[in-house]
Every structure is written in structure tokens, then in C-alpha cells.
Image 1 (cartoon, rainbow, N blue to C red):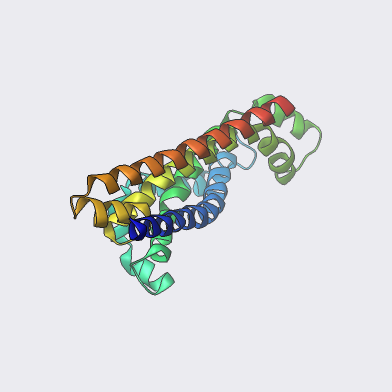
Image 2: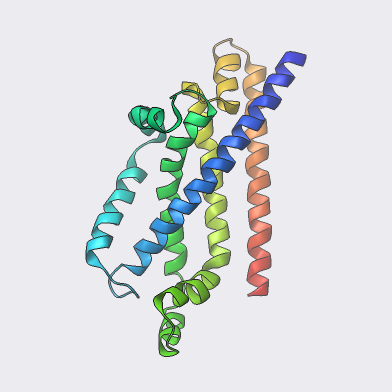
Amino acid sequence: MEVNRQILIEAIWETLYMVSISLFFGAILGFILGVTLVITRKGHILENKFIFSIVNPIVNIFRSIPFIILLVAIIPFTRLIVGTSIGTSAAIVPLVLHVGPYISRLIENSLLEVDEGIIEAAKAMGATPFQIIRKFLLPEAFPSLILSVTTATIGLIGATAMAGAVGGGGLGDVAITYGYQRFDNVTILVTVIILVAIVQLIQSIGNVFERKLRRVG
């Protein structure tokens, strides 16, 4: 039991490492793509049919590829970036490419919920497109963006578990290697409980921040 406990603790840290790093870079990618999808669409502040027609299908393509397939499909790219296709660091590359487009759609939906009257008022005051984005669009959508990131984080945790099935490390790897392959139902149950607890904690934190921001707003 001592060894199992040590393995579980290490797996938890590996999962948290994958989630935090992937979320950081995925959120940056998703933010850029999401804002671009909004401001370049027809009738918005920087309407650009050409850019929108490129970004939109790229996001759709990556969103439609199941993570386990993406994980395998980009092995050469992963090896080029981190020098290996196995382990927690290697899993981060496909995780970023998986969660980035997902976050972009969530951000797009959140920004499109902002009242068009606010944008029109900003234009009437002479605000530049950058000022509209920074001082009006993002602040108004911020509570919704918090929930979007929370949702993406939970989805990312599920993806890290799948990464463990192909040597990505983390709790998914423990469940497969020490649970499924050794017919140890207790280990499988423990990893599931830990994953559920992490998800519940993240969702609760996201809900608290979202409610506080809405009250402030």
C-alpha cells in the first residue's frame, strides 16, 4: 500500500502539471482564436471575411478530432517540439492543440453574448477596436469567460486521463497500468474518486468566482 500511495501522489502531480501547463498555453491560443473569430465576423468591429474564413474551419477541424486520435496523429510534431512522444511533457503538446480550439469556441460564445449596444456606445465615444476589446468587450464578458475556462479545465482533466492510456502519465496511466492491466478494481476506483474530487473542486472554485464577478458587475 505504501508503494501504491506514492505512485498515486506522483500521478496526481503529473495530472496537475499537465492540466496547468496545457491550460496556460491553451488559454492563450484559445483567447487569440476566440477574439479573432468574434471581431472578424460579419458586422463586427474588424470585419474580415478572409481571416474569418481561415480561422473558423481550422478551429472546426481541431474541435472535431477526438483527442485520442489527435494524440497519435501529431506524434511527429510532438517529437519535434519536446524530443519525445512519451511522457507527461509530450502529452502537453496535443493537450494544448486539443483544448485551445475548444476554449476559442467557449470564448467566442461568451463574447457574442455581450450586448451590441455596449459596442455601439463605445464606437460613438470614439474608442479604437483595441480599446473596445480591452475596456468593453472583455470586461462585460468576464464572468462568462470564467465559467468557460472552468468548463475547459474539466474537459482537459478528462483528456489527461486519456493521455495516460498511451504513456502520457498521470492518473489515467495509473488506472490503466496498475488497475485495468492488473485487474485491480480498487486502484481504478481510487483514481476515479480522485479525478471526480479534482473536477468538483475546480467547478466549485469557478462558480464562486463567477458569482462574485457578477455581483461586482
